Amino acid sequence: MREILREIGMIARAFDSISNIEFKELELTKGQYLYLVRICEQPGVIQEKLAEMIKVDRTTAARAIAKLELQGFIEKRSDPDNRKIKKLYPTAKGEEAYPFLKRESDYSDQSALAGLSAEEIQTLHKLLNRVRRNVEQDWEYVKKGNKRSY
Image (cartoon, rainbow, N blue to C red; front, side, top):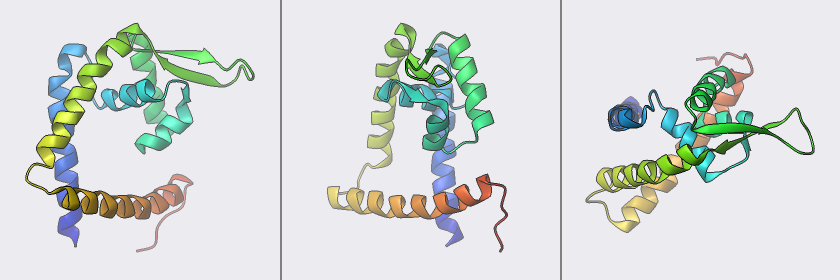
């Protein structure tokens, strides 16, 4: 059973390494592209929700968001109803980078799923969603300062 999670980890690390190399020309590093893609796909998302979507802690998200803002890929805007809430939006530079990031993502999906039938892809997606939901329970538990007992 452990081998399955190792395989998933290897796949994730390989794609992360590929992306970090390919996105170097955009000066996006260390997974920043994940944040930018989500912000482009969901303009106005708040930082906490973004961290939850990517499954990172708030501090990690804050660092990546600050760097993207400094590089001019995104901007923070105050919510008109609640000035304390800062919403994240892509800038023109971020929107310009998005099609390239999306093409890479689509290509990676095609590459990873090559040779699988539509039914196999659907089954894999369904199973991975179940695995993710299982992991999310532990993630939420540990994120609150608890320790799993094993």
